[in-house]
Image 1: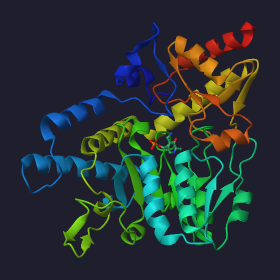
Image 2 (image 1 turned 90 degrees about the vertical axis):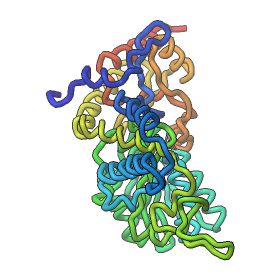
Image 3 (image 1 turned 30 degrees about the vertical axis):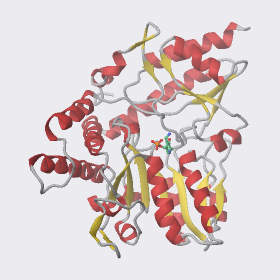
Length: 407
Ligand code: PMP
């Protein structure tokens, strides 16, 4: 990878020097959250040291600086995901809040009794529960696209679920539990073919591949800052402008109004209409710095490097006796979920942690897809571009030792 120097990249992430149980940390829990480059840490400190204010531009100098920094971050998000205007970008706390916002505004306005909402078997609970709540509230029905034995969406089955009652299709671009990359462009196009809207959960895709929401023709696209090397507590709803313009606000309060009397309130247009109260200004600015950082490395370089690293990890894991990989789709990103015969996933996680290697064990907030494969939990290493083949080797040798130790 001549365009990509992993050792240089690693020096940008101070936490990678951390020692855990006497060993250098190996961070394979990137699907849960990612680490922050020094550029993001510095940007947050700079904001609080030189720009901190609420965002009401006209009041004074620091207010102008904070407003520029915050709106600058919105512009960076706009460019990063290929939206057509910053007015299509609503800043929220994370992907969970983003999906709830859409379900509780667009959903309540546009989904009625007898209508249908389609999700896939792969979804994170964040892209199931809000739709289930909406269905219960309005008397709609939740329908589920099944997956094949590799963990890939069955497009033919999806086609059969669609009809003129389908109002929204909400599907992930990358599964957080299995790593499956779904055929999201086709999924969106098929939703549109029956007049439904499409929400794409991009929480696990934006850190690993180039995303262009206009190319996808997504009506809504959501992601979390903390999974793309930005701070926690900041996330994004992209919505097509003509849709947002017709959406009622969710929370009411300051910032989102044009005029208030005791008789009535006139709301601002999007995106302000959906950003009641003081937002997470500093962390939005931090997210902007994270997107700048990813741009400097190059998302295509990142994608290529990670693709090869995941192939290397997968090959290595498959040499271990008694291992079962869960999720074997041809197109995958970052994640290599597995179970090991004779051990609970917790035991495998603890053995790895003793060697300084962090993986998630558990249900990964995606119980339905794990149950599809007959398991309640998996061990889930998830890779990022700062990981290396040597780190993968360390993980595999620990699991290999367990597998061959006998008990
Ligand atoms: N969707 C997917 C696919 C995810 O992986 C996650 C986080 N694990 C979420 C949604 C929710 O993101 P957050 O917890 O940051 O709101």
